Length: 149
Image (tube, rainbow, N blue to C red; front, side, top):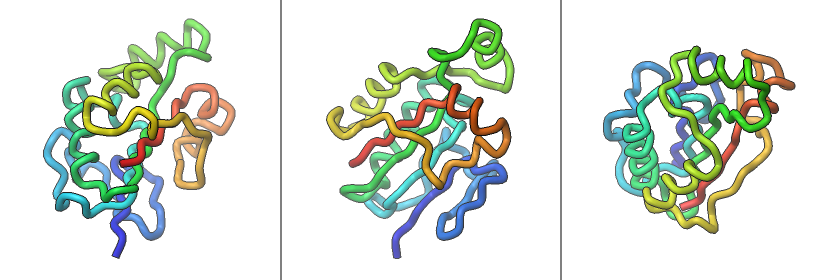
């Protein structure tokens, strides 16, 4: 059986995934064996914990992923937003860390992922944040990154 995780899922329940929200604390070790998970989605989750905790989560994802497994991170990105919306992303919504492609890639490689296997992607059918804020705004404010182990 292939384990697929949807961490911090909110209302985005995906069939065939283990969908977790507040019951899984991403600042703690993931309750899965080494190399036992094939896919992890963490959509608009890691920005709600400190940078060090977000990094430790990335390390845990690397540990539990199978060879060839994928970690998909979707986080707010400031680059394409106007000043008021950037300020809103930084100061509201409970965000404690702001990511961009440079720092997320650096953290993922430090966690063990191969830099060549970390890519920016478009929206996928697993993503659900657009249901909350609308597709246009989600496309504008979301950085989507996949790292393959």
